[in-house]
Length: 135
Length: 135
Image (tube, rainbow over all chains, first blue to last red):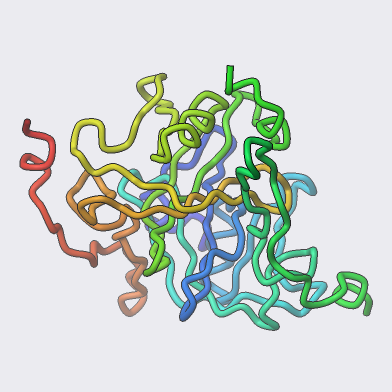
């Protein structure tokens, strides 16, 4: 089993057997999303060359794009100095990473607003989510 | 107390009262590091305009750069679609975010190496860590 491969041992998996993953778009260097992987997810990601995460809510492997067609082609995988965070550099098929139909999940900006600080949606919805997931 | 401010309630703090934080350099869009914040750390970050994290190992606020002088000037704070991950866009004073003397903490790359996959350090050390922290 590839999920037992030696290179997976370098990573410091947390108490749930997971590692946080930052996903960045090659070219723009935009941060697209943040998710988690377990050993199987990372092994499968390497095998497929497409991002496979661990869904903590659904408690199962999540091949990103399996419903929307918005797969993430992996160009590079990096690990941080503490061996406990992964950086995935990907090409985002369809240009949309967020389930809201936006390019990136990080579309909410903190604004000071003259002493009334608040969080404001600043990036556009590029595609109606109903059209993304309708098949 | 600013740490009780209403805008902090938008964030879904985890069971330890923390939120993961991705730190990205403005301009290059390079990902510099990954860390955690609690309410006090984020409130202090907004107040100072410089990144203040929560050190999980030392269990105290960590004003990044307090020992090295490598402060992070915050240009923008973003939140993701699930309200549970922050993105900090910063100017990295000194150009070094990593305690190893590198620009970014993500300097370890996964390489296939003809069926012998391994993790390889690929980015240069720009400054000797002993010189960074010696005061």
